[in-house]
Image (tube, rainbow, N blue to C red; front, side, top):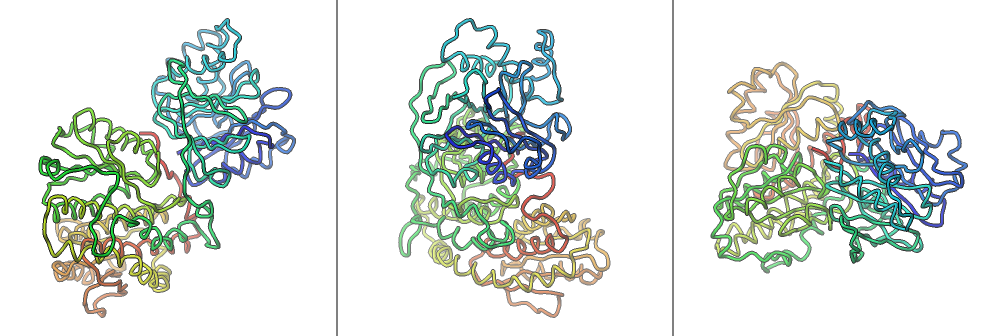
Length: 612
């Protein structure tokens, strides 16, 4: 949620800032703005609505400043409006700030500042920050090169909550200060320039070399330098990390939408995620993991903790871990996990999944697990993200940048990585099974089978045209297919705004069947040969009551029983969710297109949820 961009260099800042904001639109927002340091002081340009509205603001083309900050806001405190949009400025117009996160004690700080003569013009929590910085700045009698830094540091000491902050000061026109706590922020190093962003893809076209910040690390940026300090203002030595993502992977490359592009990138994403972890006739290896047989034998439970789509990937992982490794595994929603006082100790392994690596609820759950003595393992798509630096161990999907809000290739990559992790655990435990041998072969064949599955696109598109105006749909499955039903329903809700629910097919007669009426659409998933006949019987019940049916299957069933059958390649049940979800991704996409909706930026949603 919300996006931050910054620039300090030799070029005009405003075009770079606006371009960066456009690349962050997938995060979700309702207003946008920039601030640059001009010859006569700080200039702030902002407005409600889309980033492109900034081009229409009077004076935007006259900006010449080579240092600036920018922001897309998602309203939390105060309605979407020009006054509430960022950047914010203090009463003296000395400082300007953009901020991601939530300041939990802003009421108290606002009262304190009001008592000291400060006036507020917005309803936001952010407006206290530039005024608090000014308060400390005005009290500091030293006029040295660190005065600006001390004011920002002192203000941050008073802030409770999460924040990523960029600050410019008219008295220090050649510097910018940035700091983060529980909210993402990266610095891209260029030649005589530095770029700042909340997400790597926004500035990937400018640089591949990034500084990754830890909590409460303060940075003084100039055109050709970055100086790092801790909370006590002791200098820190920080090295850049090279990000290998291809900048073009953050572009549409001829596709109408990022989501469609990312659906079709899944064969490549899966190949990259498998990488060298699994080779034909070889062992499954994770270079960054140092687990032992003795450790795995000592644990009594595994928790997989995640949010939304990542949690659905965790359900597929649970299936593989329990069946291959015989270790009890629970999947928990991160936002609920730490509030239910989970039973965790040194014999617990906790696995946390986050595409961005910045999901606030998931990071909070990870910190709780470490406090309770559990080993923690992070799965992310972003090297150096917050969750990977908090965890004891980290492994990565290699899906490349995922821009569309609705996750597709990141989800299937997560499922693949969890299956590989299950094989790795099983081999460490010296479990001998023909299932493991066959599963390895199936994993290696996945990219080709995904390419084959993508050929169902036209059939899915045609069915979508028949049902896109419906208000309710239901997704049914048993066993591993129920996890796919959950993800399919979520995809449809996310981008088409159609009410969709998933149910274990066997539960249909225990209540949900009351919702089935003539012409309602029901989607069934059938990939487990042990359960296919049972699922057919359940879906026959909705057919009898007049429902239209779309079936995704790799089993030998009678097509005449159903309105539409989408056939996918045969594969091992463990990996079937990777294939069976693809027609449902396409189904959601085409329905959304038929409705004329913005597929990549659905309403009310953000790609990276960095607040609780």
